[in-house]
Amino acid sequence: MKTTIYLIKHADELKENGIKNVKDNTQLMNEKYILSVKGEEQSRQLSENKELENIDALWSSSYARAKATAKYIAYRNDIEINIDSSLNERKLGNLEDLSKWMENKSCGVVQAYLQDKKWKAREGESCEEATKRVTLFLQKILKEYSGKRIALVSHGALISFLLTNWCKLNEEMNLVFNDKIIEIKEPSITKLSFDDQKLVTIETIDF
Image (cartoon, rainbow, N blue to C red; front, side, top):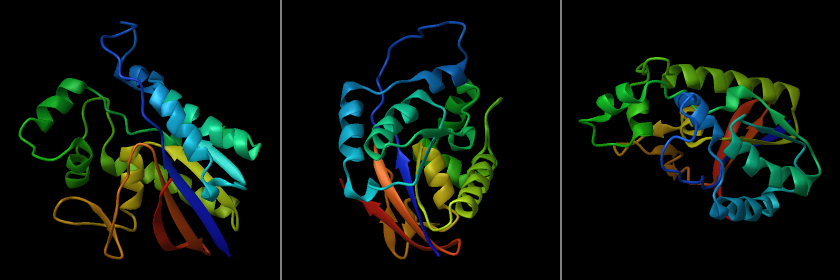
């Protein structure tokens, strides 16, 4: 039975200077970032894509920017948003640890995590740990919604981590499936087609 999963990276987030609440730790601040005006328009346009018509169920990360992106899909499909922390972005943890770790690296942060899947900052989460939780969540979704069309709104790094279950990494650390690079933009729609829980295709949907 064919099941379709749409992995959606949230739209553009509002750039802020300074810390609005000094009592918030890094994790809380990351969870509270909202969409920019551009991001709101991106989300509306994304929700109008024909691929996202007749969605049977919609799930989102608990982060504000993910829920704000998902609300447009929910509205157009007249469905509710289900929230699950398994779709949350990886926990960054101590930013000083992260900054020091990245000092001599020539690649981006996500690529660095993919190269060293066990590394994590204090109070943070490794690529390996984040991949495990989102993979278990997807397996659950595939069992509960067999034959359905499901949209999952999440974050760039986590989506990239999940795709490593099926994609290879080339020398430039790009995700590759069947010789085609899978790029995760902000926002983006990545379509996964399963047949009896076995992945058949991965497609990047333009909008």
